[in-house]
Image 1 (cartoon, rainbow, N blue to C red):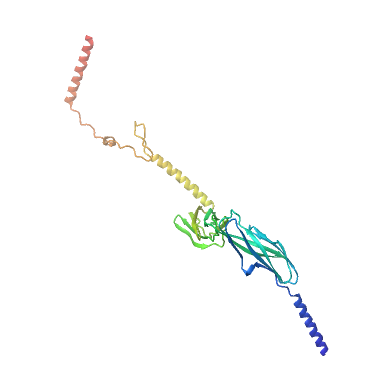
Image 2: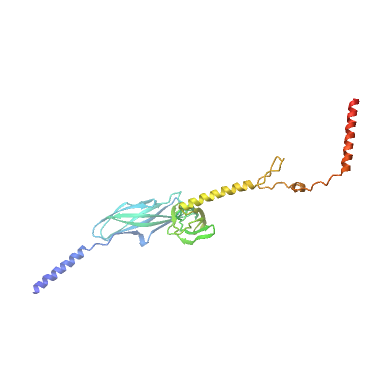
Length: 321
């Protein structure tokens, strides 16, 4: 019996030792030297900056690691392929060349290390000395029929920007949307542009809307832009209403044309557009002038006699000639 228990104990110990042997080894690591969280380099344009990458292999076998730069960072390594012995750390020097045309400000990149089907990235933060400029613009603003607002943010400076955005919409009868400034979940590198959209779940069904955008970032002047949109409900009733409104406008125009006063009789030029005709005299404006008083019979007789004498004189003068 004791022998049976001894055999079982031996088998259990062998199982435990097998399990311990099968346990995975710790993963290899790639970090900046001295345990820093990322590589930080600073210098003027045209300089060469140096640092060191530490590769640690805690496993029982040698590890081959391949190194490269990422994100446009011009990195040069002492060796691009490094074999790290078991349970050993290898320090690999590398250099970053800051080209003469590199703009002052913040730049980002990374060191990429690959080994045994696994990839590790180490962040590289580069600060190029010189005068910095923070500049942000909002471009290509558009409001579609569903109420979604589309716009593009552009970093026109040489520093890293963390923008904030506020949105306000004005309709025919006042404010229809007001979103206070809030931080956007992004950062803009120098020269970078990002296109985004702002949903509007309940735009007006019938209104003329102007949307105002205001983007800000630390150190940069506020950037503003706007877009306009006429919202109309869709469907046959709206089409019929549009035709009726157009017809009413035409009829109103014709009625006003007919009611407009024409030029005075005998005048060559009528009143100009939007001008009243020239005022007439009191006698011209009197539609029923008072008739002349009854004529005097004696005055008419004397006038007839004078007319007859004048005719006789003219006839006698003609006979003498």
